[in-house]
Length: 273
Image (cartoon, rainbow, N blue to C red; front, top):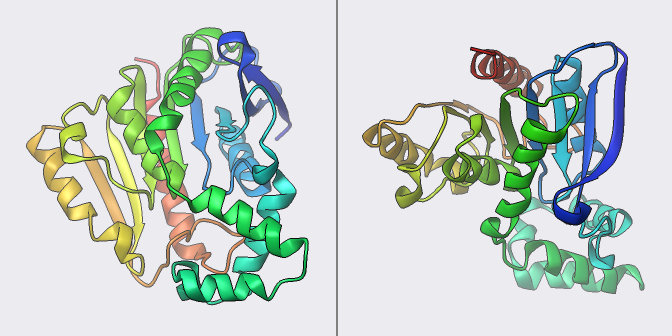
């Protein structure tokens, strides 16, 4: 399929930046899917995932949550984030969350990589405030629903991965015009937030990701008690980030099944009434 893709500025005074893709030969408008980044930002993998949703017949939009007025800060520049990803691939996953071991491994790097990896790692993982991204995500929904010529007037859904998964669930709690939300191994919204969920939610999780997955039964109970629609699947033998085909954690069986179920979910939730 021929796609049209580009980076666009949007929001008040064009303060936000995002990557958008859509089928090239469609005369009318299409429903839209917001693809919410992992912690790494809108990298080549997220752009590729965005293209996949466009190839499935949607206007797909990946907001760059790190860019301000069209530019990323130096510590979050693409090449700097790539250095952190490359470093983490050289150490066991257990080292990621062990500050002493991690700092020792970073200290063995040559300069300037040592300083750059340490600074960018600290910026990425130094305290995640999901609520800080809500204004941009809500502005993204408004842009796609009200302004974008390819999706104006159509329904909008969201799908997010890891950090983006948590944001997709949080967006469902805060944005009344969202029509469906999908969570890939993201943190759950709080029990007090669940009562405000505005749309059906679907989640995909990994059995070997207890930090995230152990909270899912409680989320399911809270959603049911609040009368909200939530379905989920836990893939046995899969690790966190099983959908990311650039990582060692990639699980093609889980990724294939989850993607098919996500497309079916959006086909149902984003269809015009």
